[in-house]
Structure formats: structure tokens, C-alpha cells
Image (cartoon, rainbow, N blue to C red; front, top):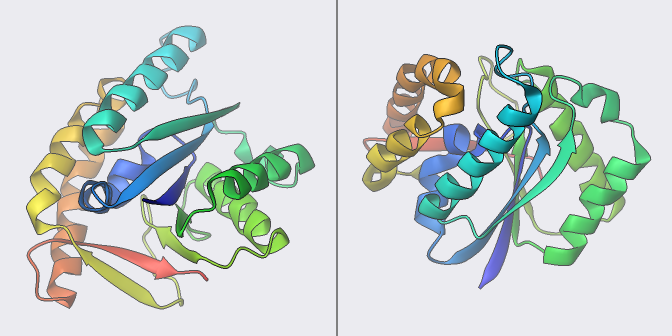
Length: 209
């Protein structure tokens, strides 16, 4: 099977942005997820070492249920990814992952996501893609986005997978506050996207390359 790489700032980004598509694609692609941040700042009332371990455990457990074949952790500082956006070592690490797995498709966060960590991941991955002259398909997925990119939009019908996507989102117990804030917007976005292709629910992606 061909590979897909999903680049994330945090361990739950991919389910919010393309959980339905992951569930749909997992039967015909090997899906590799790359997580840049340890997520240690997401629960300030807990010790950082505890929350890092908890987030890794969640990513592994939920990833298996979603059909993700492998998780790769860069272990960078949460909320500090912009400081690494021009780091040559991180850029090379990203290029190495792409070179190793030779994915048919890459999904990354967008340059207009309000979260600075998300924009940093977009910058790093797009620079890596440019440097190695990657020839496959590259798509941007949405998490906190409130504005639309100018790039062409494509839609993936996720109607049969919507309920499981939401169920798996709820399993990120360490992130319950953020996840529950996003559940209603996730439903609404999927419903609006679905209308574009005459489906009940869909996920939207922007063709970045």
C-alpha cells in the first residue's frame, strides 16, 4: 500500500481536521502521523511529564482505532513551535521523514490557522516539501480556521465515518475542554462542506501543491 503522512502540531489535530478521511483512507493507505509538539502546556494544573505521557498514550490508543499505522514524535516545546520554524535541524528531520516514507499524499496544517503552532508546522513542512522537490499531492486541513485559503478546495465525503470521528475526538480526555469546544463547530463545518458535494458530511482540504 502507498503511504500518507499527516503533519500535526498536537496529537489531536488530525482527528479534528481530517478524522473522517483517515477512517476512510485507512483501508487503502498506510497512514503515518508526525506530531511536532509534546503538548505539555495544554493542562497547566498537571506536571508536564505527566501530560506528555498521557498525550502519547492517547495518540497511540486512538490512532490504532482510527487506522493510523505509526506515530512519529518530534517532542518540541508546546506553544513554541514558531521558534523552530527556521530551525535547520527540524527542517532536516521533516525532510528525512518524507524521504523515508515517500508518501503519495501529504496533509499539513494551513498558513491561515489562528494557532501559531499550526502556522509554524505549515511553514516547516512546506519548506521541506520545496527543498526536496516533493512531487506528490499536498493538502492543507482545517482545525481552528475561520478564513478560507485561495488555493483550490477539494471535499471528501465522510458521511459513514462522521459518528466515529466524533467518538474518537471525545477519547482525548486530556484535552476535553478544547475538544468539547470544537465538537459543535466540527459538526457544522462538516455539514456545510457536505452541501458542496451533495453529501451529509464532508471534510474540506486545500490543494497546496
